[in-house]
Image (cartoon, rainbow, N blue to C red; front, side):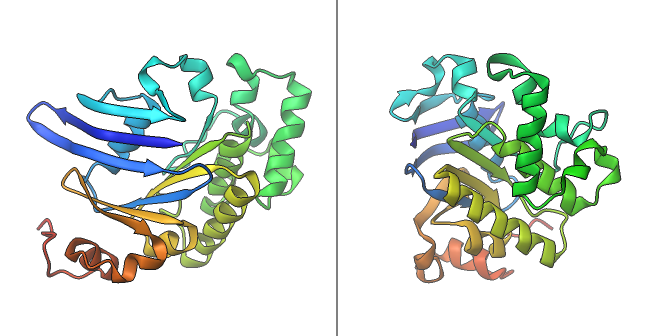
Length: 248
């Protein structure tokens, strides 16, 4: 579904991606791990076309993403943002139905509301939450609303950016389980970036380790603990000593 071939990106003198090669199969859940500042978010932004790489090629379903019709291209994606990124001035249902009320996916307001309430139910929120505002929700509820919005337009590809950041361990586990269930139900292709190893083990089919702008290792999550790669080993066990230097 997604293929990156020798993708590089620099911002001025700072080289962020240094020849990324990554393949994500259709219906697969790929989790990209790595420390802060290693290029995880830039990788996703390049796939989405928010950032144009300096060199290399990115293919979606075999087609160059830079040559696709922009609206039709973006309509295939859903996104759960790290901080929720809900619109404070809109009630919950309008947040969930944001894409359904605008652009090429536009639907009549009553239909969009009905879809939003159904998606809220899918993530475990009652219909009465629909008319609340984001500020009236807990962090865990906001994350569920973000997940409902990500799946509202039935996308074939979903990105999850640090889906459990700021959540307590129990709620993080709930969100991880929801993501796994929903991705499986929808048959969607999923790409998650995280440094939370509990999320990795709950969500991933395959794992890619990104460090210093390169993919150090990629393979099934079942092989991650015995990868034989010192970068992966240090990262997944949270060791201070190893080839990854801690920023002091």
